[in-house]
Length: 269
Image (cartoon, rainbow, N blue to C red; front, side):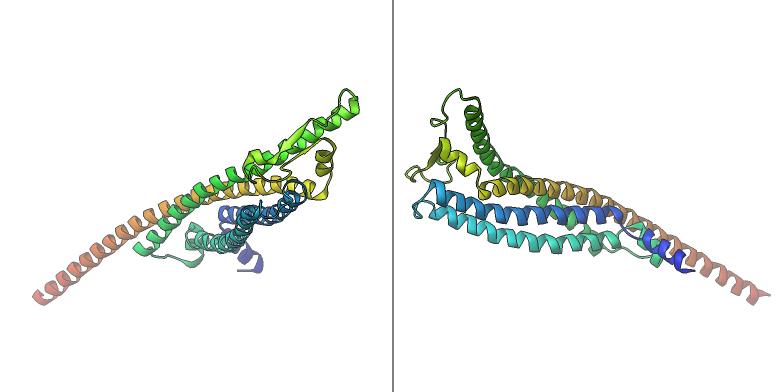
């Protein structure tokens, strides 16, 4: 075959569904981990500067956020390896591999590993649904603060009334204790907080992190459909393999009977 035919044949062996799911999974995890890590750092900075000046009041929150950042490192490393493994599993369980490398035999161990990937991907998909819901919480909190700032700006623009009595109390979200000082921001102070780079970046990074978690959920659902299809393919291939083995055995027995019959006939003659 020429170079063009070889390229076409190789491209025909690529599991495009697994490749798309892998790219989507890598992109979602990268957005969630990268943006989430930076956004958590910005959130701590906002709390320390404007809502909890005493470090002992938010010491527990700082430790939890630091722990979450370490967990983010682990999530990124795990899904990098897991995505590569699932992509390799997609290469070796598609019908295109059979066309490229000839007949292959499935084993009970291979089918068991494929089923294990289906179960593990299902568990990870359910877990990431929880992560997606959890990542929407800081988006909701920052949106409330941002919408309150917009109300203050609109009052100042229309000159109807002062916005000094409009406040945001972060303590009501439970992220800092009720004895934290000052714990809330009102009027111009709140507006200045919304105009800081930390608030702007953290708000938008939390939105991107939430979108990344949603993309990861979609990728895992895509992987789950692919793995289920591959497992069904391996199951059917094993049945076909058993049928072919029985057929070959019967044909061999028939040939042996025919050969013995010919030998007996020759001995009589």
